[in-house]
Picture: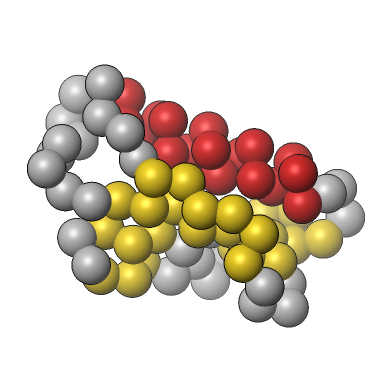
Length: 72
């Protein structure tokens, strides 16, 4: 298991993730990041004009994936 981090960029501002989550692979962490982006986009209160991106980083700081939030 390795720790992965999921900071977000929302309206040009970085929202860091200081805790992260444990996953068995980078693929599983990326799937989780995609799920977070879908959940945010599915929230009826989500501001559709804001630009939000969920990033996925491994414990060494390498970017694994980025998921752009799409409003429903």
